[in-house]
Every structure is written in C-alpha cells, then in structure tokens.
Image (tube, rainbow over all chains, first blue to last red; front, side, top):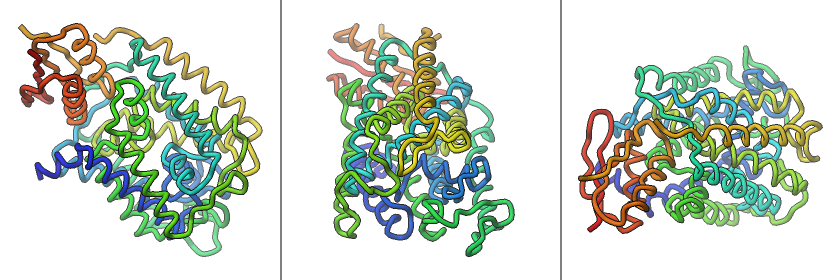
Length: 364
Length: 72
C-alpha cells in the first residue's frame, strides 16, 4: 500500500493517471457520450442541474453517473488510504460565487478544462482559444496569489460534514435507480431526461459509473488538477501536474485516432462554436475563478470526496451557476454565445477581480 | 533555531508559497513547516527538494504533519 501511495505522487504516477483518463474519456464517447465530451465536469454538472430541474433546457438534462463516481471514487480512495479529513470554514460563500461564475464562463466556452483538452485531442481547433483563455485566467490568478490573496484557513470539523456531498451524490444515484430513463419520455418520476441533444447522449449507466469511480480513485491519489498544472508551472516553474495534463492530451489524441474520432478543423465541431473571442474570454473567467478557488472543477469534486466541505460548496456553486446559465440564456450553443453570455462574462470577470483585490489579508 | 511556517488549514498553493518565501529569505539552515493534508505534505516536500533543500523528516503531529527541511 505504501509503495502504491508513493507511485501516484511520482512523475510516472501522474503521467499514468493522465493516460488513464486519456484512454477512458474518448472511449466513453465511443460508448455513447457526446462528441469530444467523454468527460466534461462542467457540462456534466450542468446536465445534473437539468436532471433535477434547476435549469430546463430540454437538450441538457441527465443525471451523469461520471460525476457521482468521481466523488465516491475519491471518497473510497481517501478512506482506504486514511486521508479522509472533514474540514471547512475557508470562505464558503466566496467559493460558492466562484463556482457559479466558473460554470458560467465554462458554458460560454462550452467545456471545463478537461473538455478543452479533449476537444483539442479530438481535432477541434476552437479549443486552442479556450485553452489560451484558461492559461491567461490562471496567470491573472497567480498575480493575486503572489500579492497575498488567500481565502483563509479551514478548520477540522465533524466527520459528517465531509460526508454530505458524497451522500448527496449517493442520493442522486439512488434517484436514478428509482426513476430510470424511460424510452421516449422526457421525465421519469421527478427526474428530467433529454430526448435529443447532448443530454440524450450517454454511455450505459454502469459503465459511466465504473469509469467515474476509477477516475475518482486515481485522481484522488495523484492530486490530478488541470488548473494546478498551469498554475504551478507559472508560479513555481514546477511541471509535476503538467506532465499529467500533457499525458491526457497525447493519449486522448492517439485514442481518438485509433477509434476514428479525430476530426481536425474549426467549423461543425461537436457542441462548439467558432466565436474565438468568447471562447477565449469565457475560459479567462473560468480559469481565474478556478485559480482563486484553488482547483479545477474535477479537483474540486475529488477534494469534496476526501472531506473538503469548502470544495463541496464550490461544486454546489457550479451546479447552481448552471441553473442561472441556462435560465438566463448565458450559455453558448453551437450557433454562438447566448443572448446574455457576453454581459455575464464581463460581470463574472469584475466579480473575480473584486474578490482577488479585496481578499489579500495577511494570514493570521 | 529553526524557522516555523504554520500553513495548517491553508489549501494549495498557500503552503508552498509560504515555504518558498522562507526559502528565499534563508539561503541555508532549518525550516519547519506545519501542514494538515497529505497533498500539502507532498507539495511542500517536492517544492523544497526542487530548490535544493533536503527533507530531513516528516512527523505526524496532532491532525497534521511537521515537515523539517534543511540546507547547509
């Protein structure tokens, strides 16, 4: 067990985890998930918001088992390796707001950092603008970090606090089993299911869940984080996490080639548009929000699985943010940005700057 | 006499930033860093080693760890 522990923290460990995700994400697409969306934390949390009716865009409603698996897989790893530690109290409301705007930014681009990488690995050139935006947003975040920005200390708390998000996810899974998808029906009991669009495209429940659990497990062990990959490179010239990210892109690219999912170009890419400026700025917003909150959306799920109540609040912020994104027509679509997407991106950037500039108090 | 950096309760990348600040101030000697998660323990150790410091010991203490790094 000790050796396994060391392995995941090593360079080959993180490269292995990146490769593992790089194989499984394109395969999930092969097994039914939407194009270049084998895994997308933002899109899938948005689909969950749709499944429970927090947003009613008919094409993006599905209780994604991958997200449930991420949290529970991380929980299992944390319990097994005695790393589960219930903690909270580090500016939860700020994390909620950052989560909401991170989601809004990601939905202007149409993807979280994981999907940005997977879009690139599938040949979608528009992803380059999103990734450039992500890096720029994270760079702004590192300037705040260097000037003393922090969200204060968390405190150890009741074990049950750390269990709340994993239990919520377990509850979502139970709901999915009680109200399973019915062919041709937009609703089963209290859950909404898409009949067309990305929400209607999904791998079989058991496969999605198992892949989610496996990825959650290895990501908890390795601390895989796409935001951290760029942040550590910019801030400390440290490439540890970056190796994992690079491995994901390269392996996903070859997997896509092998299974016939690599289609290079800019136009007619799946669940994407060619509005470069907003692909870029949407991800600037998301990248900055992730940097200020200390983790990409995937990492926040894994942290929540190991008992971090503040990361759990960020996750809930993202799910609620998805509600706003679709109810207020902020999210983009293959035809372009939503009617209010531009305004929301600008407001989001201003809110992040406000947070970054005003929360630079010395640590007590 | 070693310098103590208390990074307990702080999340990534704060513990590493605080350690780096101390490393910049002291070209040699001993620094003790208090952290409370495995991730911070790994990150601080990795960062110190990358700057040419040696991780002398990592002790479990209370709910966290005391990492001692040295450079002579």
